[in-house]
Length: 128
Image (cartoon, rainbow, N blue to C red; front, side, top):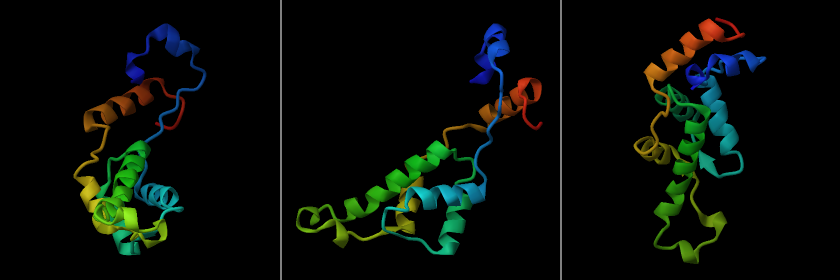
C-alpha cells in the first residue's frame, strides 16, 4: 500500500505511478490472452458480459478467474478423465466463468481504490 511508505523511502522513488484497474476492453483482452492456448468457446456477447461483470477486478483477479474457469472442463470430465485425451476435453464455456465468479472475487476494495487515487493525487507523477 503506497500510503504506508514512509516519507524518506518515498523520496527515493524516482517514479510514482498509479496504474488503474483494467477497464472493460482491457479485461476482455486479458481473458483472450490468458486463454489463447486453451480451447474456449465464448461468443462476443458473452465476452462483453464477462467484461461488464468483472468491473473492479485487477489483472491478477482476471488471471485467477480464468484459471478457475479453465478447471470447469476438468471437473465436468472427472468421472471419465482417465479415459479421454486432452483433445477430447470440452472447451471452456461461459458457464465455467459464471461458476468461477462465485469463487473469485475482486481483491481491491472501493475504499482501497479511493486511497490509491488520493495518494496518486498527492504524490504520484502521472496524470491526476
